[in-house]
Image 1 (cartoon, rainbow, N blue to C red):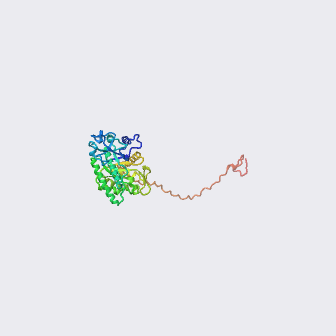
Image 2 (image 1 turned 135 degrees about the vertical axis):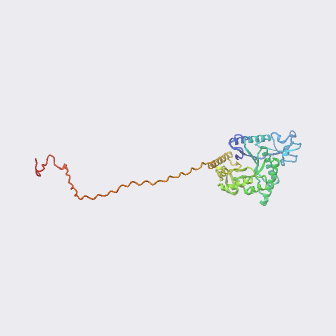
Image 3 (image 1 turned 180 degrees about the vertical axis):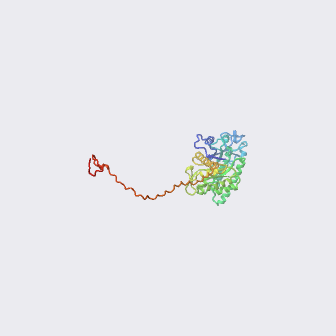
Length: 400
């Protein structure tokens, strides 16, 4: 099955809530949506007296993502802590998120998405730094974990993220350390979401950030449970290629399909290149990378895939990609089910035209020996004088 959807609430949506966006996606004929968890506003405080004895997920107007002792101070979220009653002197970490107010809100959104058959994924905050200060590393880890908590509440199957910049040392050492970090995050997600949410690692278009084609695929091979995201505009910017033909794209898509144990997750938009590592995302019709060859490959193969539009036009380009895919599918169907060509009718052998009957040759008669009659001159009667009659036999000049 192939799904199409935008990365965020559609631009044409009149309401700005998450449920409004899901309903609008469904009305547009799309079946997927990537929820954007971009801005993080955490607040850590002590539990109030009226909250003691309640489960954190039952609190109204509060999105609690972490519960722990007083010295917890926004520590790692725990499913056990989120599903047990709050104790006195517990520390709560809540998030202020414009798309959901509490877990009851998340559950209603989850039910709506399933009723409308809209597949949800969630993108974690973009800025990640595991090689900076200790606070930056801890904050980066917490952001991905909080994204996993929200994804589990929404019923999203993926928590999509980058892994940030390389460290100051050797790049191979940085890759090894990032592999260990990703492995710990995968184990945490598997435990705290009961296996319903998986970590998806996205390529990067900047050479100083972890996320080349080889690095993402190698990470997916080393860490079981990682989902490699096929972000074509980022890879095009990283490799400085436009993937203009299906022959260049098919090996790339096959590599990501083989490294993914489940549906392939593809992110697409237009892209423009500038200097090394400099690019910007554009609408598909204005970008250097076109979706037409991708549509041809998807129509020719039976792929299970979700295509997300990260274009500035969001749902408009999602619908445009769906249109291109349906056109390619129609051409394939017409080719497979075309009526057999009619057998050539042998042309009748042309019979030689009958030769016209020959007339007997005309034999020239021999010329007569009799002398031809002398031609008598015809005298013009008009030359004769009128009023006179010539008397024959009486000699010339005789008149009667």
